[in-house]
Image 1 (cartoon, rainbow, N blue to C red):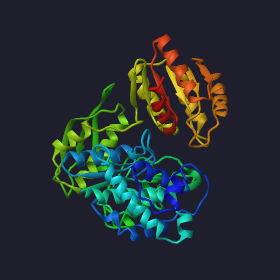
Image 2: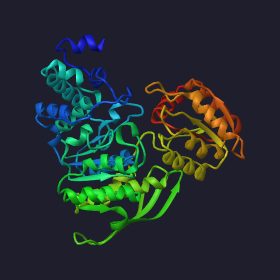
Image 3: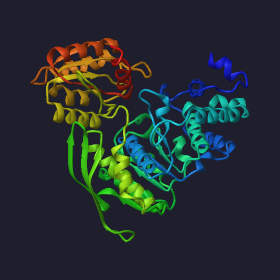
Image 4: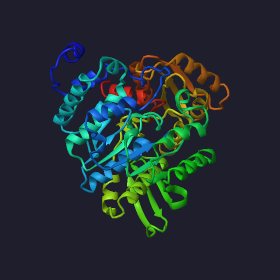
Length: 457
């Protein structure tokens, strides 16, 4: 047992899996939903004890409600293509925990994970027992990433926040550039129940004198970000004011687009045509443009060939990912009304209406809005459990979809199959019999379950 082997002895870790299991013994607020006093004190103490690995290389810090994982990954992929060894931090993972702690092109060598893990454990073992008891999974996981980055001698880091920004464990960074993607109502129990309140938490990553690249926002969010940028003397690069995305074309292989960077006092105008990301969706073009703007701000001389190469090789599990051709099966980790709307519309535009939907979401989501968005476009909807990592109530979700069905002209068939494996089997059988495509969405945890289970059926 990992606890007996590593918590009570000085036995060194033998694998990255051992490190992950040990870190997982600490309280995980991704799993346990409860109010706590979020603060940076613990992670700052840990970082100081480790010799500040967060300072080992120049960094980019990315926050936001949607798209932050894509932007972080694209920054890392482009930097990697430029010859800059890059460490990337992301969450959640879909199939492998190492997706959270990786390079711009794949996993670190196993020895990096083990070496950094043993360094982390030595630091934790030398801290007071009360401090260890209060330390969280995410705080330790974040420090593990920074230690992996330092062990790898990377040339840059691309770091995604976990929750919010101001008090997120990653916010010990002093990045070259911060990026904030679109803001939505999310995690309201922690971040506040208004767009302005949530924007205030995200704005916490803006650093004094450092540029902030900002996606297009609602007026109430924009006012907050403008205020923070002024108070911190941080140059604000608001995307609609300094750049433009044109000619977006989406097909089943991915997304092509043009980026126009407008002339400013700091640089000449520039147009990059026929950019390509191998993930379908207009939103991915917008994510890519934020990543490019951030990189061009930090490294004006970065070659455009590296931008093209990095984007073309970019991949991110669970983001409109096609994992089967027979039948066609797309998984997407969308879990808010806006993101589900985008996923459904993209799916319908590429594969037509009348397909099959596997849907599952965790407790606390806006099920009614998502049901309204989904029911008109599918002939069969299977409600299931989005894994067991977080609490969910499939029967309550099913009841919402049934009520919405009666208000929908198309009247799709709606099934409740709480067992995720059974739901996937049923969806596959229906798809094969009817020659229909499948979309699985509502949660990253559901996307992970489908990805893992579908290949076994």
